[in-house]
Image (cartoon, rainbow, N blue to C red; front, side, top):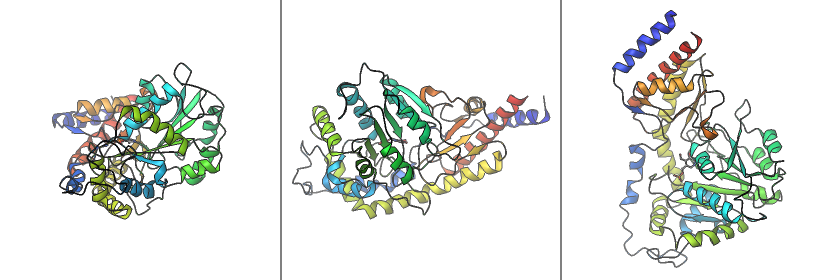
Amino acid sequence: MSDTLASLRADYDALVARGLSLDLTRGKPSKDQLDLANPLLGLDLGSDHTDRAGTDLRNYGGTDGVVELREIFSDLLGIPVPQLLAGGNASLTTMHDVVVHALLHGVPGSSGAWVGQDVAFLCPSPGYDRHFAITEALGIRMIPVAPLADGSLDLEAIETHLADPAVRGMWLVPLYANPTGAIVDEQTARALASMTAAAADFRIFWDNAYAVHHLTDEEFEPIDILGLAAEAGHPDRFFVFASTSKMTQAGAGVAFFGSSPANIAWYRTHSAVQTIGPDKLNQWRHARFFGDASGLRAHMRRHRNLLAPKFALVDRMLTDGLSGHATWTTPKGGYFVTLWAPEGTASRAVQLAKEAGVALTPAGAAFPYGTDPQDSVIRIAPSMPSISDLEAALEALVLCVLLAEAEKSA
Ligand SMILES: Cc1ncc(COP(=O)(O)O)c(C=O)c1O
């Protein structure tokens, strides 16, 4: 055994002996972040429960959602109010339902239901595991698309795949992607809007989950994706999703769905069968709590104050511990850092960390079918632990990556 391996093993034994119990798995807001929205829970609405449209928010109805809240998000997402609906508490539910509706009924422009056909989705990877879980669970073939060396979308590869009429969808997080933090710029958005697709009903699931979740002073403005698509002659290409999950309280927020007039009419038809209306009182409380778009942006800066030091700590500890061994992202927003461990070591490093009491997202989770072809990506979610727990977890992670690397080259 080499001296390095022996010394790393000794350090690892000492780490295990510490009996840590830490969790870096999911990108959940911390308790401090959730507390920022506590005034929302105590809002006394009194007799203030009729929105401008005249809907009694306590009752059934108002299926498009509270207009005052849709106006705030229209501003943040760059989507006209009539094309933006406010719904239940989770955008993931809307994404799932949209895929199910497409399978059962097709979408505007489809020749029929998708089910029974060979349907494939492009999956820029590493990507969001829960997107891939939806398509996998619903029997949709997933095609991974690796990023270019600079982390941007490989438009050429996407265009090549779009020549296949089976390709009906693509998952995409345009801003601060989970987990890479990648940003789709306007030029790329234009290219996606105008690209030729063999399937007339090709849809991009534009999941703008992190539209206002900035970690720096560079607060990116929303891209008018629906406008670009209409201009390019593909008005129905984009389904837009967003939610307040990481703005107020993740389990009790409001989800949004935006799209072209034809897609919105399609969605209304199918969702009307599912519900007689969303929780409008919660939407109303959110509208009252934020006040307006600038109130919401100010609220997000309070999140940034809690999150940015954690991301800075991750970057510092990876720089100190893994420079020359691994690479990682320094995102300008969102909830994740992606670490590329030496090829062929991510699963082992995650296993070592687990055995030392540090839970990490399983290696491979950021890829369709859980398969990372390089066995290299480790997703770090720094939001939830305290600074001191984060420091201990990263110290352990660094050691586990170095040990996995040393074992591999032994
Ligand atoms: C890209 C992305 N989309 C959606 C979600 C979940 O959103 P929601 O809470 O609205 O279902 C997450 C949560 O981590 C996410 O990272």
